Image (cartoon, rainbow, N blue to C red; front, side, top):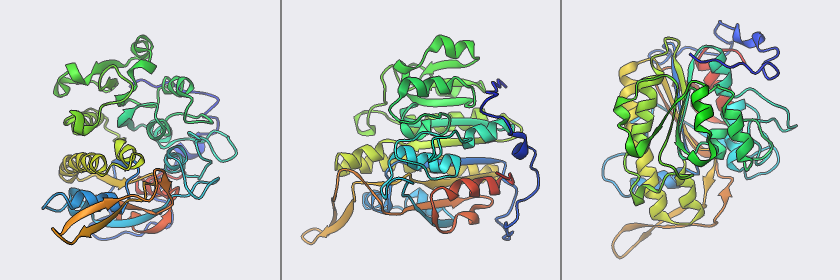
Length: 360
């Protein structure tokens, strides 16, 4: 497996990569304390309980996120600089385990570099992957490999990707990447629109939806891209005998919230839930995979009400921006009990490391 070490970034890293013992504070729960080999973190950008409820109102069967989950928590999403976070600070808090300022990517609140989950686990020997329905340099995916003061620094963010701590990445952003450089670093490259993902058989690749910056909306023909990309990433990451870490983002739920477009929100949420179903079936069969489903924040202040004439759910929004409403954390699989309760968003990082029996 390709391994490119950034010496300046990883001075002193041996203090935690050598940790092997179960951290203090882990209490075993019968039937839920099997060793965790793989972690799949699924982030529905902008997805609060209202977004899940709106999606549920459109289907008769329980959402897969509900039927699969074994434990439920609430994540408080404020950043270090604002009561209402942006996606950069929200995702970075999960990725580095510390709250930071709005728009920061992979940096602490004092702007110093912090190890991301992907970097830590890659050094530990696990395969690492990212899947998103937005460009791969967008705030959430970027927060798992880049270190920049602003989420809008696309050129600098993509340059951080070349550091080599992500083995598999699937999403948008083709115009920003240098495919020749990717090939020189050992990555294969693909376009979803002209590739049968079932044929991809390599542990190091970057795949783009097409040659545009972001994939299209689900309602505009994106089809099963998110599910296909996620399961292709899992199949290839799982070749690593030490296990893997995969972050999957349902990116455009947030965009529907910003547009105050309930149909956009619902279609994207149902697509995300369909991907959760596929992940859940695989993880349940695998038995060594912890799955966490959460959000970086809620978007739109979405609410539901009933129209008395036909008893159908109707939807409204209070803002076109993010809100400070806590977001749910659903978890299933070994050690998923760690994610119950109410806690700050940055604590998700430590809970993942605890589940993997790695000291920060």
